[in-house]
Image (cartoon, rainbow, N blue to C red; front, top):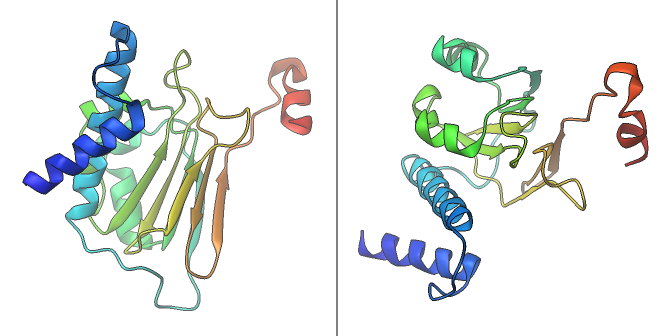
Length: 188
């Protein structure tokens, strides 16, 4: 347990700088929330021994625009889906959940433990908007990256690197009513 605390401390210092820097209350709360989320998912990963790569040649990848994950979680629909269909990878779009809610709901209890979870939530001020998640059965990705370039606040992209391939899971913006966001969707 001591090494885990040191690792967390080093993570916090490397990501946010020295603890002696002065920050606003909002920044401090944001840092605490991010650190709690990091610890939460780190503990989830440590509960199950994930492999480095898939053993089989063919893998099942499912993609699902869930349009809000909370109702699916509380009713057990998503857990039942994972248990019945056993996808190797499940990509979810439009999760509409923020980091704080992930923590409050203790999200890991809603999924079978053999699924490695990667969440990319929309950042404030648009909490509970868009968002993506990827669940990988029994395998921990070699590298994870979220979003890209100027499009890094809506939680629309997760890229996972595996031994033999890359998975890019993207939730493309809707053009909107009256095609207001068509330019953003097509040109950006």
